[in-house]
Image (cartoon, rainbow, N blue to C red; front, side, top):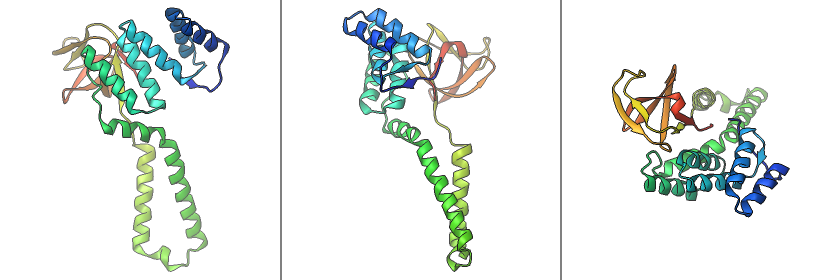
Length: 228
């Protein structure tokens, strides 16, 4: 699936889909919305909410949760977190427990690049000043030098090793969760569509996921991976 593109303007196809939605031709509008998203065309954030609520009404919870997650990643709000938790509790889905840390994590991801730009500017400015005023005693003090080395080390970590939670939503009926990445491994559970799992790795045709504080494996075709 193409990466979504937000827009403040309305394309002809989006206008047509919105018009169908207002006339309560929901299935027709949903089909057009899906084409817009699949083709990577521009759309409004509200489109995702409309799609989520229509899919929920059709009991296609994997798609409903997917669209809610897409919206939340761009527009973090506690109300959307609570909505996902409410739908999950009503339909017996796992992976949507509301926690403040999830809200913080999404906010941090939203501003990741801006924070990186700011830290790079500070690093470059500091090095420039050090070169221009290298004779000043302040820049020769061990405390400053150690602090700056620690700062550069953190910047290196931030760029190369800082990662965010990768998650996927089960999209097939009776998706099997296994203890090993093998069809002959120990069976752990079957999942209905709509459950959200934390992906910790992958191997061949399997995703490694976290389930009940242990590692498990699920076939890639059974998981709809949320975009970063």
